[in-house]
Length: 118
Length: 115
Image 1 (cartoon, helix red, strand yellow):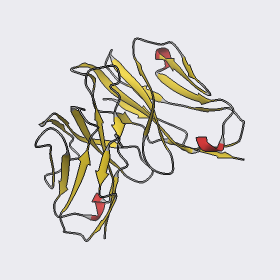
Image 2 (cartoon, rainbow over the protein chains, first blue to last red; image 1 turned 45 degrees about the horizontal axis):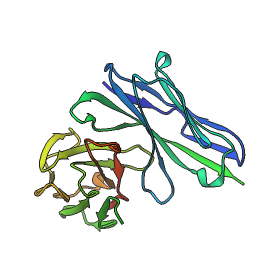
Image 3 (cartoon, rainbow over the protein chains, first blue to last red; image 1 turned 60 degrees about the horizontal axis):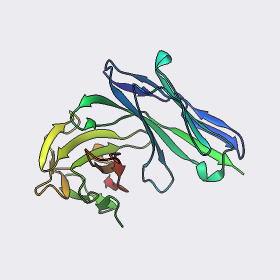
Image 4 (cartoon, rainbow over the protein chains, first blue to last red; image 1 turned 135 degrees about the horizontal axis):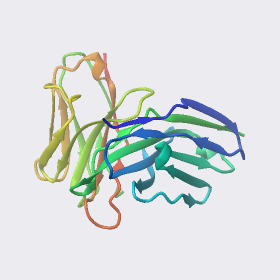
């Protein structure tokens, strides 16, 4: 069965601190995809990143970076120099691959609520 | 606005009533997904369509739930004889299967409250 665990329920930091959100996944598939979504207070889920199981290269996008390690089944997300606007709930998700259309339904973790204080 | 839209945004209903939600996907997205999100949890998959065909339904989707996508464009999700446990945010997402950008994009959701 597929499962995503986000052990950190809530994290509180002061602006400009770096913060890492943990994500651990379980799957028996050899081909799968991992995602991060952001859900700000407005409620709409915003796509941040998708990685496939064959690409373990870390990725950096501005203040955001992602560390994918198959050996530990983890896909962690780091925000550098956090800002108040980063306050949101962040979800890690998993999808099986090797199906028609690349990937399909998403299995989400419970989310991590990040509060960035000025 | 070219994003996924959902209507209504909020719905309050009494237990036992039927409700119907609508989702309009991004134009030309052939896959459409429904998820449900309860407070403090991540979204849970309910069902998905490829064009007008409903290809998968979760065990969460009881007999009281039905979804359609009659012309392969918008979709409706109906809940019959609502129960208090149905109170949740119902999210719709769409994606294109091919092409460079085939991410799943979510709508703003319909928040259902069953009293």
